[in-house]
Length: 261
Image (cartoon, rainbow, N blue to C red; front, side, top):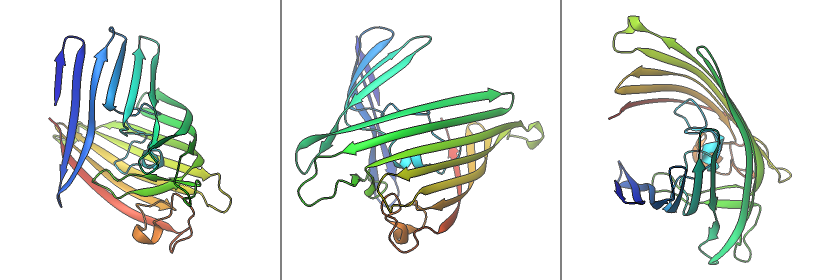
């Protein structure tokens, strides 16, 4: 849902999925100062890293699961954009149990390089959470709230992330409605500051089919110490990696077909 009145605007999206799962995609009230700058209050997209997605495949990678890609957060966001610069800033880290604001910072460098049919994207991220947790709760990890589609999960409070993605576009006029395919290889890794907490890794090889308005992704993903791979056995993957299945590689195939309009 979108609306506009003079310099004010409203943008909201809501997801409906099976098993009565519901989630807010985004919801904010905005004010545009001029053609270059605006302010958003509510639950806007968090401005960070490679946009619009931190990988080519449908199987989201480590930056996404640690909320550094395709993520919404409650707060205040300011944006400025001209022909050369795109600046966005947002705030803050809130603990609903203690009713207090902790601190959080993240810094990243990313780049996208194109040469003919080849596209290479990469990024490096350093982040630190300092939550205002209640007494007896460890500050070594941070709880990420569930969005209605996935359960809540813990992540390491401090760490570094690296990602490298390679894609190759191939025109396919001989495939009828499929006009193009993209071959891709995504890799990401999380190094945790906490001693004894092993690295998390994800590697996806796949192909994307373009038959607009239909698009499809076929992913083959290997993951180690990553919560969505290994199920309950690997529920501590983003943190201590001490559960059954830790440090083992898990494989999953994912096929997604979407109609876009």
